[in-house]
Figure 1 (cartoon, rainbow, N blue to C red):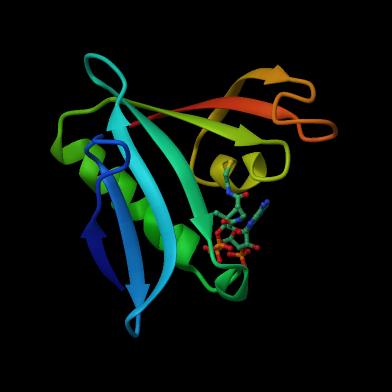
Figure 2 (tube, protein in one colour):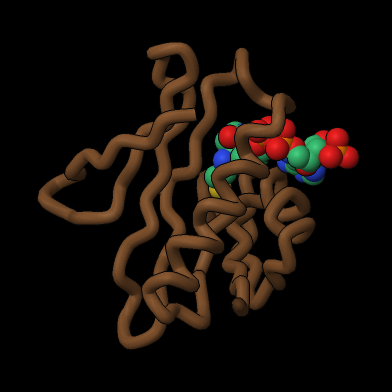
Length: 113
Ligand SMILES: CC(C)(COP(=O)(O)OP(=O)(O)OC[C@H]1O[C@@H](n2cnc3c(N)ncnc32)[C@H](O)[C@@H]1OP(=O)(O)O)[C@@H](O)C(=O)NCCC(=O)NCCS
């Protein structure tokens, strides 16, 4: 997998991931204050879900955060994606019913490194 940085509204920290030249995922690990980062918009082309790319991204997030001396990564997940992040040690700290729209609950999570 090849990672390339790309700016989103002038913010640093976003990457696209390519497999065989095709963009399959985008995510941002952006500043969240001293010693903290936010993991934003981890999206995967549905054709590539379940193929291990999400796990590869989480390992990269871990490496990037540790290299920056970051101890805490915040993740704004949904009730559907929270179990995935939980597999990597993220803990839910807040649930907002319908936080992402009707029937899609927001789950704020923290991943301590
Ligand atoms: C959730 C998502 C990031 C996971 O990425 P992925 O590449 O499909 O995950 P992987 O293939 O690395 O899966 C690793 C393991 O996690 C499991 N898993 C994947 N998605 C899961 C989910 N939503 N809940 C629970 N487990 C999940 C897989 O079954 C796999 O288990 P196994 O190792 O026992 O086989 C991806 O499916 C996705 O982008 N979904 C749509 C957008 C989304 O929900 N993004 C999060 C924004 S809040």
